[in-house]
Structures are given as C-alpha cells and as structure tokens.
Length: 481
Image 1 (spheres, one colour):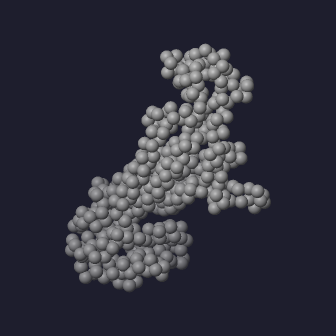
Image 2: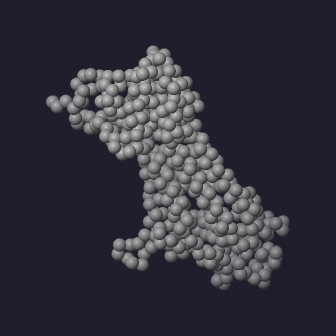
Image 3: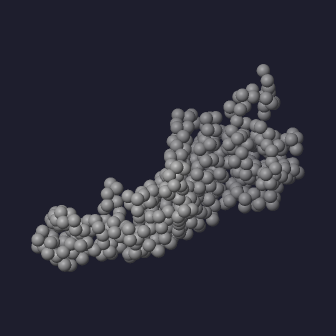
C-alpha cells in the first residue's frame, strides 16, 4: 500500500485515494483569509494568557502575515492537505518546525471551521448589503423619473388596473427591502464567537474567549460547545436570505422578459444587454433576464442541500458537514453577481411610454374605479360592481374602450352613472384617485420612494458596521502579544 503522508497524529498517513476523497482544500482555499485572521487572533489570546511564549507567538504571527502577503501577491503555494487549515499548519511547520504546533493549542479544527464560516458569512452579508443599497437607490431614482408613465398591472397575467411605472418599480423595491431585513437577521445569527469550544466540550487549558471575541469583534461568545461545532443554522439562514432575494430578482426578470416581447412591446433593451441569435439576425434576446431567472434555481438548490445535509445528524460535529463548503462558498458571489447584473440591466431598459399608455387606455382596467365612484354616491358596492360590469360589456360590444365611454351610453345601461362618475374612467384619474397608503396614487408613491431610499441608507449603515476582515487583519498585526 502506498502511504500518502504522515498523519497529524504521527501515525501512517492516508491512502492517496482516501485523501483525495476527503479533502476539501480545492474549495476551502477560499477561506484562507478567514483562517489567517482567526489564527492570528487565537495566537494573540494564547500569548496574552501565557499559554505559549510571546517570542514564539511573534515568530508564528510573522509567518501567518507572510502567508497572507504571499496570497495577496498570488505567489502562495499550499501543500496538498485535507483542508486549508492543515495546509496553513503545514506551511508554518515547513518554516518554523515543531514550534508551529503551538498555534493549535486549545483549538480544534471543529471550532476553527465554525469560526471561518461565520467570518465568511459576515463578510459576504456586508457585500450583499452594499449591492442591495445600490439597487434600492437605483429603483428609487428610476421611480422618481417615471412618476407620469402609466402601465397596466396584472393579476393572473391578465390586465388588472392602471398603475404608474413608479409604483411598479416601488413594488420591486419593496421586495428587496425585505431582503435587507433578512440579511440583518443573518448578521445577528453570526454574532457569536465559536472559537474556544474546542472539538466539542471546551478545553482544560485556561484560555480567555473574551480576548478572542474582542479581537475578532464579535458581540458575544457561543453558549455550548456541543451545539457550536455542529451548528449550521447561520449558514442556512444566509442561504435562505440569498435564495429569497434571488427569487425576487427572478420575478422582476420575468416581468422584463415579458415586457420586451413583441406581444407586450413595453420596453426596448439597450444593445449592451440584448443578446443576438446564432441563426436569426433579427433577434434581440433578453438573455440577461433569462439567466437571472435561471441562476435563482441554484440558490434554491443551495438551501435545499444544506437542509438535507444537517437532517438526521447527531449532536456535535460530523464530517458530513464538510459538504457545506461548496454551496455556502457559492452563495455570496451568486447573490451579489445576480443583484449587480439586475441593477445594470434595469438601467439599460427603456420604456415605450406611448405603447404602455395605449395598453392602459384601450382596455377596461378602470372598471373598479368607476364602480368605486358609484359607491361613493351611496350605492352598495356589489350593486355598483354589477352596473359597471354591464357598462363594460356594452363598451366591448361596441369596441369602445372604457376611457371613451359617453354619458349617453352609460346612462342607457344605468341612469345612476353621471359625468362625475365617468371621470374615473380616465386612466390618469384612476391612478390619482388611489391615494391610500400603499396605493398607486402620487402621494403614496412618494412615500414609497422615500421608503426605498431609507432602506438603502439602512443597508449601507449595516454594511459599514460589519467588521471587515482586512481591517481586523491590520489591527491584529499591531496587537500586543
């Protein structure tokens, strides 16, 4: 039998095929930054508690910093190990020999992984919040510019009521404001420092978790080691928040996919985002919106993978949890790339205002407004509803849009119709009349735009409050040992 290498315990190493099967190095190289930051913080705590000599701590820190700089320069070559944590330890050992092992005092890979993943999620949430803030500001600005553009709204994908385009854009923004809240919840879930619980039950060595907590800027420490090393709730929370946000992006993309079709004809796509056909030269395809919609499925799969992964696991750590790497490491970049592309694409879409208004004016979407205007005269709404339905049928028989109905025709259907009631058949008037909170009326839309801006500002504040890895690393280089 071929021996791959010496195991960490000092015994025979893993068979090469077993090592290849069990290794996560190819994936968790992406956690190198998190691993180095966590290691320096742990090292600092060990030195301050006199668990390792300060001279050795300085030597180890110097090499951890050297690894960081080599990684930044693109010159770092890590040994083929089971994971990035062992690869870093192997590099330290290559340079420092036996004393490199001091770094692993009072630490298990179980709590080390738990820390790295939380640091990763915290960083990616901050990035996503910044992208969401940009998207919300863009939607608010576009809504301000489209206050007077009217467009049909849809239920069951049938024309429903006239709305302003600003209202539609605010509706999209409302979904993304909830994503800001969801990511805020994720930040709360990763706010506990896991490092210091060891493999499962803590350590007999006199460590000080509060030192590490302060260095890594966590608000608190985890409560129970057995729970800590097997906990992936925070990962599922992040995957859920990302999935939900991408489902929102998918819904927006589907609208624009439809709007760009000749059957709707509401928008034109800038050549910078419209893709051509390999065979049909006349085609301008909404590939960007199709791919946004398609990529949302990956986010659904990521959450499902994590949920199935933890289902049925016993308490504590199991190696099954290594399979969280691929989906968790993909989640952040997938979320930010899709939201960034949606923002870019929406800025390259131009509405045909005349076509949109023609779709509104040529239909019967103001029927509810006419019925409500009748109800305002003291007529029971269900009676007004039936009378307006009869009026719509009379207009349809004559090929007459509701906006063009005459008083004579209306009163021939029901004498209770008058000129004032029929004013509500004007699409613009129909939009203006919906003044209630949450409606498409101008005053309501202004409040909604302000709400988008407020959430964008909040997202930026939340992102700015997240301790970033680069800043923590800089502070750790100067921290007293």
